[in-house]
Image (cartoon, rainbow, N blue to C red; front, top):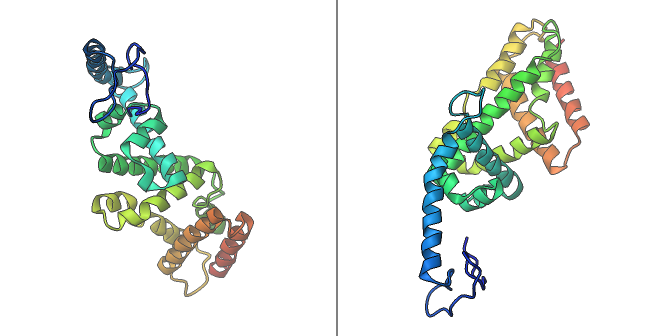
Amino acid sequence: MRDEKATGCRVCGAALPAATRGRPPAYCSRSCQAKAYRQRRKDRAAEPAAEAADVPGRRPGGARERRQREVAEAVWRIAAGRGLESASMREVAAEAGVSLRVVQYHFGSKHRLLVEALRMLHEENDRRARARMAGLPDPGDPRAVLRAVLIEFLPLDGQRAMALRVFTAYFVRSLTDPEMAGVFLHGEQAVESLVATLIREGGAARPGTDPRREADLLVSGVTGLGLDVLYGRRAMAEVEDVIDYHLDRIFS
């Protein structure tokens, strides 16, 4: 962004002529203005080549994917800290430490940027969750497995707390944006289906238990309790006690 209060030429630092109309001049002469223009063209031509360059040993396109990830992470930080309305392309570029042109090159528009950042956050959460699921308790104890699954959706660490803040920031906008809603609601209630399956196939649920209804209650309840933790209304230990209460009610 141009500095309206600058007193020196942006190329050579020489004193600027007095403004006659419009914005204050940024260059001391047409020569310096031409130099700046040529440099911008040079940077613009080099950007795609730099983005396409790959690191030895990584699959093609890796550099581009890494840059997109860096920009997406900037969106997450802004959405978690200041809200989604603050995630303009210029603010995202500044947060990511890149030029506005780089953001435009990779995402094209603000809407595409926000949608893709949300999609990448879902992918990141899925990847992390699968890695953590590898350490779940013995599947012979359905209650312990289900408890571990539910606990995964609480803000147990900085990454999960940030993800929950970002999803909350996206929620309102997704209500009126079909494309964003399609990403936000990905999986067709996959979590509820997983929880219902664990209740149904565990073989230890109380007679008369409806796995699907119990799954709906558990998932929506844990989501709300996680928000309470973020707000400071509940401690994590209290939330775990609530989860244990409902699991004791379901399993004999």
